[in-house]
Image (tube, rainbow, N blue to C red):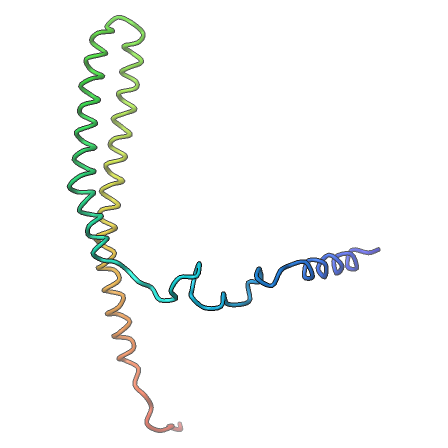
Length: 144
């Protein structure tokens, strides 16, 4: 049996075995992705609330927790002065500080993204309206 013949057999077997629901060349029967609404919907109030929570709770509390941990670690380093444990705690403190800075930067980025989403969608909507407004129906067919 040659390659072409064997390949044709494999392809026909795969086609027969694939359930219809797995085909990518058909719609999901309406409802959009995962059975939800086909329309894009945003929740600006929820995005604003999430951004405010990041700003008023998560960022300040993360900073307070980092300060508390730094104070406790510094005290421990002093207590273990001259021991290898003190050097290990200093390494842990350095790693912790870097992770806190990374987390705070991530929180700030997420806050900015949440607040910017409404502006982005609003700008996109205005742009789409302007493009649609620029399309004028033709009253008659013009010939050149």
